[in-house]
Length: 396
Image (cartoon, helix red, strand yellow):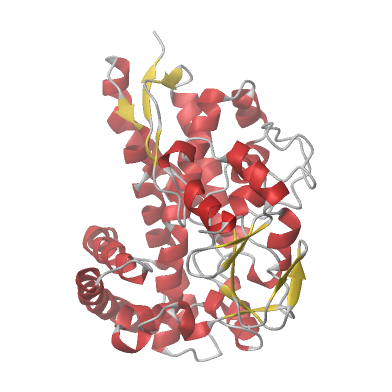
């Protein structure tokens, strides 16, 4: 086993889950380009990860991003998401879909999001006041689902069943998914696809003020399959990472001196620093391909090689961020790679920002005496690094 392979395996071990940053700092210095057991390259420095977004050097894989797309409807639709495409098709589709992910459009669903978060907090008020321990992650998990449903215009009475199917189908896109998971995912995909095709038909006949209506009315005449791929990509990219970011935002509030002051003063700056300080993306889920021989951090990556980024590491790189292990919302965060960079900047970035700046201030104002009630539990960190359990109680 090479040092790179051993180090990559160690980074995924349970001993580094709660705090991988000391080990990642050693890796950035000594092994800035890792090779995984499958032969893929993983970039760990800020400069290296940023270089991966250069469309002249690295490209999307299309259907090769999701092996088995020819025998799986779920993977077939996922292979057509924007992140798996290159210009000019990527440029054309991004122009269409980005109209409905501006901060103005996302803020249209903010009042409903705030009301939903208040309802969730109502549900834990009595247990917390009675001295009970509450798992914040269980509280958080429904929030991104609610936001996506509001944005798409999924009626409230349909959401539980529809999103249960969507979560099931996501399991089918995992690189480690077995035949059983693939079969369950495809079965769920068929149901979800039928639902969204019917929703699109309804919006064509009776448009509403939601993203689905805007997409089916687009002058570009997008096909139903393209729209479904966009929906599948939104679910795949917008659930796990947003849940992880919200959980980290709460943990930082409980652990970092002065964090509450920043949340009161400037929730936007607080949210951006949380996304840098505890970036949800551990190892990029969708690899890119080197379009030619490319030198990155002293290593020549051969043309045709598969390459991923490790943004959790990149956003703690001291060559880019002063005192990178200090939580400081006053810092300049223009170089943060939490949402990617360049043409592949995450379309859902504003959605995640809105969730953070809505829920975290509400939680803090409602329960200013919140404290940890035990050790947080971190999930296995690939592709998303996030908490699975975060126990809290009210002080005193």
